Picture 1: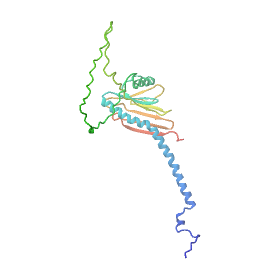
Picture 2: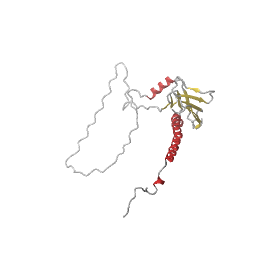
Picture 3: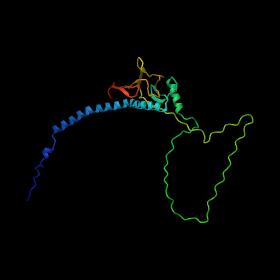
Length: 255
């Protein structure tokens, strides 16, 4: 007969257990790693948020250069204190409010106009007609007789006849191509063009224009964007429009 002793522990239980000292050491290591990693991750998120407008501007510069060369017409990027706008050259307004008003009027369709949108592509699949009974002694109804067009209205007694409207109504309205990049709230933006002696802060009603010729050449420009926590500076090449220099500084710790 076999007897089971309750006071004997299973083999290996002492080797598999953790002592209190080992648990405390492991928790201390985890706490140290978390204390180092969390501020780093917060700083990376803050840097990404600060870089978002600059990253969008770098991609927009390449698109503006390509449009200017493809359409053989100048394009421009306009800087103002609340945003960055890309559009075709024009809009001679020298003040911010006038420029934004003209831009809003340009992208707003006139009353009664139809906005042209690309027609959906419909795929037609031809299938064989199912067999059915053949009608005997029946003929298709005759086509309707064409109706004569209505006569034009008589000319007025004291003037020439009005010009007829084009067939199908007014032509569709084509909105101009524009792209706007909003700047963060309570941010400061400064521009330095080639030949400027000092940075030009965009304040109040100021605007600055960066024109791209059909050849793709534009004046070298540097942009400095400052928020409450980050200051980032970026420089663009005159020939390629690519970023040649970038600097980012953290001004205050992350709350």
